[in-house]
Image (tube, rainbow, N blue to C red):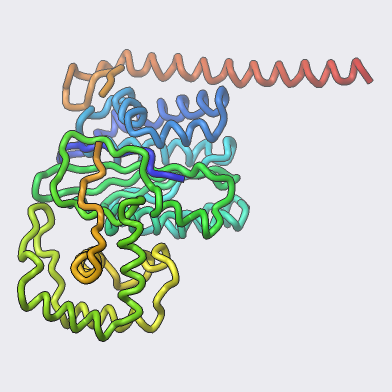
Length: 368
């Protein structure tokens, strides 16, 4: 399982008008049905996990090609489409923007209970929390998550799309994840941190981004666990360092990431009572946020000389125009015609499958 990529988008205000969003839902529904009918459920999840394919989908649906709103609006349209056809095709959605992102665990639980799905899918709640923690805390690139959606199949495959905003530069960064393993066992979930990323696509590379994931920070992660097992020495050393102002008062990307010694001591002592055996469980422990991880990483480098990865891991299309009139205004007549054509195509594919099934049954009985 891995993060399959990310893109960077400018923050725009406004929302999709009702006349456009209703059509986005209808066209999304037809596109989903065709992809699933032709290539299967997992293929649709793979495509959602491709940041450029997702961007193209949002553009085909008529949203602003370079707007942060493309993420939230496109996922909302897909989610609403799946509310209609999800049970039939075996794909479901949870989460969303703002308060809906916080409701992701409840959405998953409700889907499992309401649709009588396998209780093993409740493990998706754990996965949802972990990938959010990675992109919001373990990779400190200045983007705070405000959107989180998970799409999953009835047999446990999943894709996560989440987006964070940087209020300083008014840009958003979108992160895509996909499950590429057969069983979400605890050991295998550790790969989310050990080797989470294929590529993160963007146009701006930030300096001094703390990345506690991946192979280059593996020693730092181990040192952090060991440091937490000696809380008194750690707190004492941190206080000395803080007094000497070894930690800069302001980072170039993330302001005020210093943590006061008294707060640091409180967190470390509470963690010492239940020091986890692996970094994955530490990442999910309540009360430990970006400031604490940053302080521990710097302590590990100062005391043991183990350096973390400080390099930013970061490495468009049209069919109907765009909401903002770029590159040209949306033509409603053409848009509705596209929906009609896709509906006919989806129906023909369903009819073709039904005919093929009937032929197979007839051949079987002829041979009996």
